[in-house]
Image (cartoon, rainbow, N blue to C red; front, top):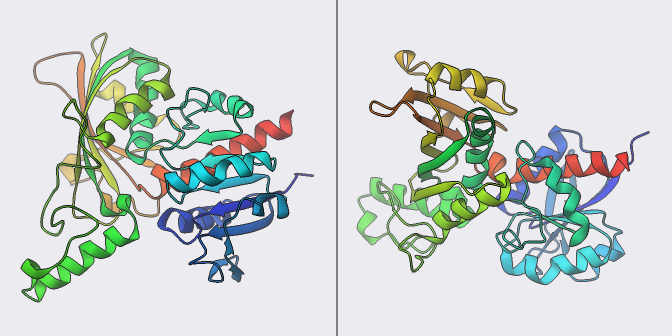
Length: 344
């Protein structure tokens, strides 16, 4: 008989937390008890789970021991994880953290289950498993099978990232600005979630700029990819915020060690886990943010050879950033951890 687990969701009322709750239900995760947690401001509110209203409890250092939590899924911001994840570990829980706080800690595994599930075994070193950045997850899911087949040398990526990557308030800001546009008041519309107007605009900045001219988001993609794939891949990213609500898109240019054919790439990716090929441009069939919402797969299309170099392939990939880029990956880590835990 399968063991059931006491699971805490930290940030249960946030955009990612809500998706985690939905996915736990969809896959019928082996739950003994769900404990939704949030700040004191949200404590006492409720979340719906399996048709019942469950009260959100206040996040404290003691709650993990009091509720005998075994798996703690964190998605409430890096400062929250920094403060409370150690308490969860001390109480005996494995922490799966969706923030950037622990990602580049050399002792903390950074995991995408389709790419490096073996790294989950390192969780005992710190009690923590880090969930990568949303834009990194869908990319490495695509890169891994191609690297195995053809030896990937370099990645050039431009992202088109939805407002939900910046949270609920950012999504509301886009909607409000569009409403103001149709009311002929866009010039008076405030922007707080972003440093520029997002409606009818694209912003070539996500996170702060670093000394090298790249943004922190762009360097996350570079550094996280190497850690996840255990390979120093040359990677250059340009990350752009676009006025969509959900679904990150990425244009990839991949340079390999040998000649590669687009048809071969389609075949390799069609056999990869949680990858869906949408690549019939003559029928206007290709990945788009609007078609990936609420999906747990990464969609790949526009696969084509470079016009000048036989070892370069171009493609376009899209995934739901709140799911594939966050909640789905976190729950899949939890599933793999359960499999390994029960196998010991």
